[in-house]
Length: 189
Length: 189
DNA sequence: TGGAAACGATAACAAATGTTTAGATTTTCA
DNA sequence: TGAAAATCTAAACATTTGTTATCGTTTCCA
Image (cartoon, rainbow over all chains, first blue to last red; front, side):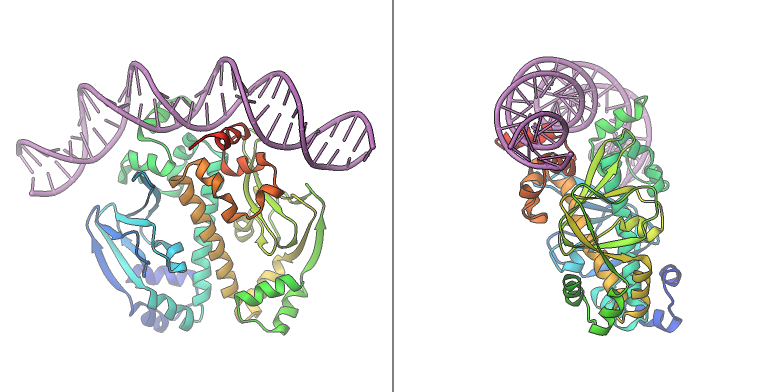
């Protein structure tokens, strides 16, 4: 649990004792490539912290088509955070794209943290704000940039993604078809 | 300042004395229809709470086209929150769509709240989480729904919008042209 | 309150994007 | 390691969406 300790210490003032108390409620799990870490239709009860590997967040539309909402990388927290907070059935699938090791934080641990960590609320605020900024950027780019421009700058957000993720999943993330992405790459802007 | 008091009391445990201290640092401003409340290229130093009226959040692309990112309604907090937090020059314009009265919360008041209100951090967390959920929904819908479906359900998020906002601004929010929206409305799904 | 500007529908045409199919190459994993 | 599956490009065609222009109607505000 060394990685998550470092990340938490970089975000808030927290003692070793507090960290012990918090992480004592967590456990480590490993998922194989393409395994589902979380599935739709049940209320999410866990938040994950990625030690190693990579997670893809997927939503399915009515026609059954998969759309890639997000990629989560090492040292990041990930969950269907929206449904977790609202205690609603999830719409997302969390899928391991590689052999992936995560720290599992159950809801009870999160609630314990808000109640007992001196800066627990601040930690929650910072994580929410981090994802708010990420999403705000996404939405901004969706309006103000073309798919080609978003493709060309994708490594700013997901470094090394081209070596870790097949191109059709990047197309899915960009909201276009794989065929169209193949065309865009070839195009002279 | 009665409205913002009620909203804050509904979010956190806060005493009248704390509210007095916090709101003593705020002031009320009124903007005329189509006036700019905040402009791009300077670091946002204020967060607004809408007493009366309506605010449109706009981003401009390289070609100078306007895109409507968001509509903010009565009893909501609004700002270029992303740039406010990062202390970066804003990319957004905040425009009053009607005569609009706001409570202005300067950065110093926000920082004072985090430091001195017993549940100031929690208040910050709840606001960030509220907007996170809103954005998550937007992104989800962008992937899993057509523009027509998003148009048909827009009043779930912005009640009464059709009586308050011209259709071409709704098209702009949906990310399509006004001509195309006019076509979609007529189409039999 | 009256003239100017904004607004929304529509049509014709252009451009962007999706769909389907095929084929060559690479990757996976039993 | 070798057969099966996945991946990427390409082309032809279909569909969706954007662009431009026009024309009544409504709204705005000096």
